[in-house]
Image 1 (cartoon, one colour):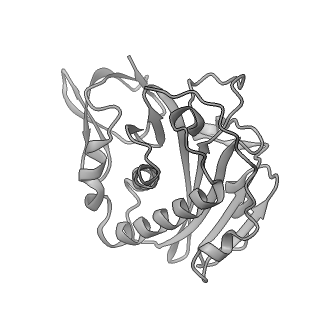
Image 2 (cartoon, helix red, strand yellow):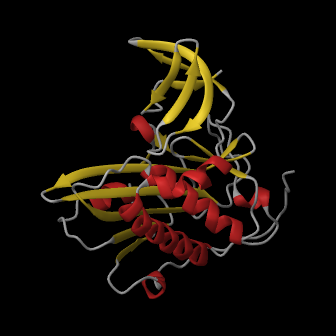
Image 3 (cartoon, one colour):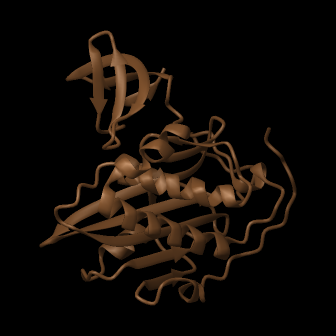
Length: 260
């Protein structure tokens, strides 16, 4: 059941965020920026973990060059640049970020969240958060930039094609954005350490409990591969599996995948 309330949220002051992170993390804080992902991408490469966080993103990016829409001071908008060895398989990494987000929000009493493969967080049938991962090879390293947008307290007249929800509609407890942001960053980095050693397999059981698409009918509309079927979960590399009349099909991208 969704709780509609009039809780007042104040603007977050991220200026001292670095005090809540490990000493070897470089943090960039903005009041407004075009894209946190783009900012980290244009920095000179280094192996240090870097975080960019802002109160407003004027040209945010979603999957497949879609726009990520938001309003000033109404979301948690951040990106993390993390460096993996070049031989690390990144399959399932976006799923791990989603699991980290759900695990943190559960500590705030926010239950019933689901993950829509591979990068969206849902409450009911409405989108609460999105994840964008971009990576590039840098010699012996893979530089991975993880963008995260979490709806906290949107204005109710906000217009978006995708049905949305924010934390204000889910919980009557005010959310401290600074506290939540540092908890999200630290949990994501904690899970990255586990992922680097064990891959997605270590998170497989967690994903199965929050799989939004499990049992749902989908269609794949790529002209080279047209089919429909039932989602039956993911494999131990985080690849989506769809049961069709032609057998089980692995799905590596959501670009041509649609709910029926």
